[in-house]
Length: 450
Image (cartoon, rainbow, N blue to C red; front, side):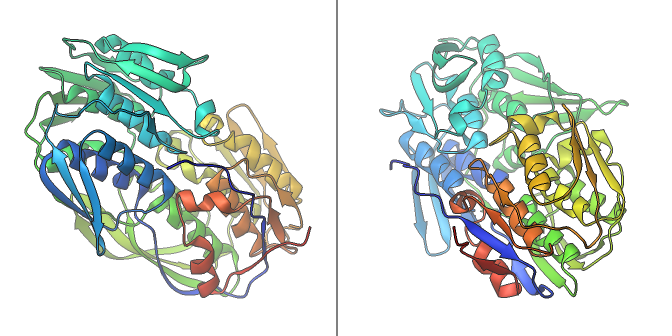
């Protein structure tokens, strides 16, 4: 399946009446990627419900099929017939991950240690993202990087060693993708692979691998440093996986309901993993009326419904150590901060510069284009809140980034004037039903006149 960039689809959002009703989120992207990968690697059948059917996750599914797994959708369920640990076959074509950074980085760990050559490629946006953070630990295992572009960029080809050795690796940055890649590599290496992380990042890999039957031992010392040990060559068995709603997607209707007067919205079936709830904590500190209801557990993960009502927000300082639990949510937090009273300061967010776009620059430029003052530092953003007087009226460059697109469409729903984005096509990578779902709740969108 080739991915040609289609013509951009500009979109505008304008001041809306209250957003009311209930909305269900698309499945969590992190868990969807892993469900397909772990199902492909396990023996027997894995049945997945609630899978996010965005382009990124489907690219991971195609890659797993190239490695020998059988994957098909029947009704509302995805069935994955796995091959067993260590039994992937050499793919005859490159594994194309489209825009999926999680997919490609995890796959390099999952497949890179096999003693054959595997090739990895992606779209224009993914091809400028650095992969050295994963390549470096793989090199320590003995993986040969047969081909790479300058700066450790895609396309990349890897060849695993005949006798891979387990490593003891301390992650140099807070990254669940790096941690997960090393853990997945360790699954086909005899012995114990150890990863040490000083900052707790999202732990779906640990939880799901245990669910599939892997021996994963996690200890945390007095300073909060986590040591994760993975036993190689486990007997993984197919599972039933229910994918909860994506908290990073829930961020958009949540902020929209806080800033649009008259809103009272319930967002159903959202993943509440403590490593992913930094945004909710921050919005409540800002004065957001947010209530968790119907709290429950599924597959080792916490899930809840979130009820959000329009609120008068105030500016706060977000602690830098919270960044790892909400890195994808800062763009939409910056929009919420625009409608707060007083300044909101967000330190420790340099990781935003290596996402689908330089998100820190893209957010700052989008705010300024819509009349909101902000200060963009190397690793921080300070937004001067304007209460309910955000001018809007600007055109935002999205840089092919789905989160930038959605966060400025949210801004337009409460700004004085319509907010336009240059392209909405890539919203489909993570939240294909965003525009129709939000429209049903009362949001106003239109195709702008050029």
